[in-house]
Amino acid sequence: MTDETPLEHERRSKVARWRSEGREPYPWNFSGRVPTETVRVRCSTLSSGEEAPGETARVAGRLRALRVHGRTAFADLDDLSGSLQLLLRADVIGEEAYQQWVADLDSGDMIGAEGAPALSRRGEPSLLVRRLELLAKAIAPPPEKYHGLQDVEERLRRRYLDLLASPETRQRFRVRSLLTRETRTFFEESGFLEVETSTLVPVAGGGAARPFVTRSGYLDQEVQLRIALELALKRLIVGGLERVFEVGKCFRNEDLDTTHSPEFTMLEAYWAYADYLDMRALTERLYARLATRAAALLPEVAEAQEAARAFAGGFLTIDFVDELERTSGVSGILEKTPDQLRELARAAGSTVPADSPPGVFLDKLFEHYVEPNLTRPTFVMDHPISTTPLAKRHRRLAGRVERFEFYFRGFELGNAYTELTDPDEQERRFQEQLEARAEYRFVYDADFIRALRHGMPPTAGIGIGMDRMVMALTGAASIKDVILFPLVRTS
RNA sequence: GGGCCCGUAGCUCAGUCGGUAGAGCAGGCGGCUCUUAACCGCAAGGUCAGGGGUUCGAAUCCCCUCGGGCCCGCCA
Image (cartoon, rainbow, N blue to C red; front, side, top):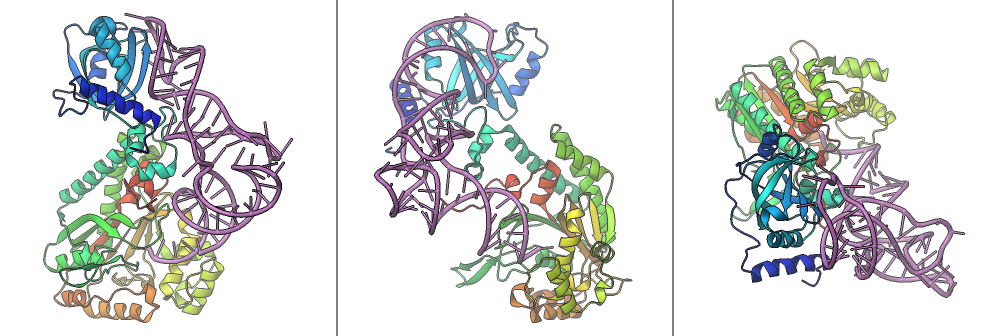
């Protein structure tokens, strides 16, 4: 180990000493442990300086701090349930054992302890230790104990350090897990079947993003990583599965910013015989439930509490065209020619290519004039048809589709529509996209058209970005804060 | 892709006008039986991201490279 620091050298020599004494610094198990929380609860009925007579508890975790006062020492032990003070006394564990432990323990070590629940004289819940066990020697030291790991790059590249130093990070990812489970439960209770479709596909469709491209050696042909779940799940609706949902990774070969990650988790659900208004009602119930759950799990996080209040109050509903015309001061937006829309988009600061399809300009205008203001939960309804090639035309409003997107805190959380089920119209819409600029092309999926020709029932579909959902409900500022190992350049 | 900012000990950070590297934590040694960012004393710890330049002298000024952050653009 030529790159070993003096500090690591010191800790390694402790490992060597343990081995030479016939003790194992990396043992195999530690049985019978309870969460430190159990001991804390037990201590709540003791008075200061009192120990629970004749009781024994075993706890295990990471040593965060060690405060040695001659023949008494205080150690802080962290486990997933929280933290507990260990009380080490020479007169309890014996002078020799005491001196050895005090000399051998370092912050970061994994240890197990057995002893009696006790309250220190200062009233701190503690375990008066009778036996200690080293469960793993930490050669490398943990991050600084008070400030923790501040360097953003290190937090992302070495998430284990972020997790072990920051209870907030641990809690955020536990909440993510629980919200994902809650979402699954919600859709299952609503009669949806969870499925898993393929991540590797011949051609990635269902959106307008650049895919990751790789190769199958077995097939000797190019394969792509999916960018959406849509076309696969709609085939399942054609096949008669009626209500399906999938939670899975999608991949888009684009830049990373605070709300976009090249690898992200998408939920999509398809509901046969329903329309987008049914789906809107379902969405409202889902978010009210999730926000309540997140707020209960994060009582001290102001953003989580705000989100719960906001979603409990229901969504605002606005019309895409009305709102855009109101905020931009431009009327008759649907009657504008592509050239006029391009000029309006340019005036609003967009630099998208001039030969983009008109729907792109409308999206840009909306993003510029409306999106930043959508801080409360808001449904945006009934988009212009040119923005949305996979949605069914509106049953009443000319030039529109039956679609809603929903927003919170100024960013999009999801997107839903009454699905386009007419195979010939779908074919025409794909064709229109094909005529547009190459990089905005929807993939022409001929087999998907063929599936529609067999008859797809009226269906509502929705896509929800799970990472953004967790951001919105936990108050995370960046999508990287809710992805355990976001893609970063290798150093 | 454009603009701005950042990179100093394992970690958290100072470093003035260009004058030859500082503190706290962690670790070592010594002291201490109720601390909780424990405390007190002593000693140790550096490729100042990397490379080049200016200069008698560069952590400091200039250029390039690498990595990161924020904003904008792009990607529904």
